[in-house]
Length: 319
Image 1 (tube, rainbow, N blue to C red):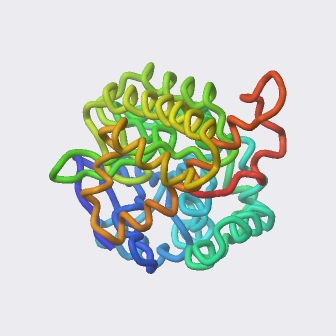
Image 2 (cartoon, rainbow, N blue to C red; image 1 turned 45 degrees about the horizontal axis):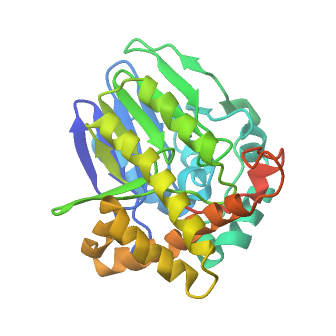
């Protein structure tokens, strides 16, 4: 496991998995100063031992907070295992997600159902003690407040955290991969996807006016407003492309959508430059993003953006 010092006190920790192509994909973010130490998204259980080894290498003796942008298995599945190493840490997550981290059986079964061998590779989710987890929209620290902002675009239990000028955005603005040829980017729109909700969530992040946006998948950008407006444009263009191609029939639908997006979406077109193993991983997850959009377009009723109360478990837990 590797890490990079991105800014004074700020570390990007790579959470590489054993599956082919699952490197430079999942990350944890660490902020450590003399006054405060917190980790954003510890990742799956599989990589927790490597994560704790990296934290020790960096010199982390204690964690004050473990911040969860959302509770999908690739972001939060290792929380309980990490807490065993840092029992003093307080876990902060969306209020809708607290009970599911305390009793994660349904979350784990849903992940198995939708991810199959990928979930098995990530590792089983273990419970966290009820007394260790809560939601707080503001945490006061000597180095500045940590603010939690509700951003339910990618998941109904998704939060963005602002600390100083850093925005820890999880998957609210999709994923990125930096290349010599530019930036590869795509939306993360698994079921249950809601277009208006996703766009307004990104609006909330734009309003925070940070100077660096830190992605869960994978890396960071300092051109924050451009990154976020690009994410919104991608959402709109992907929905339009899926809608147009659906009207032409089901034959080779995903292939036609992907080829159309390569021509229309410059950031997505950079998929051509990804290493082969990462490109194959992306093709798998692109299919799930397209499924979320198809389901959204197929939604019956006058308000397709309405999110059902049971959405925590019906989501597919994919990136």
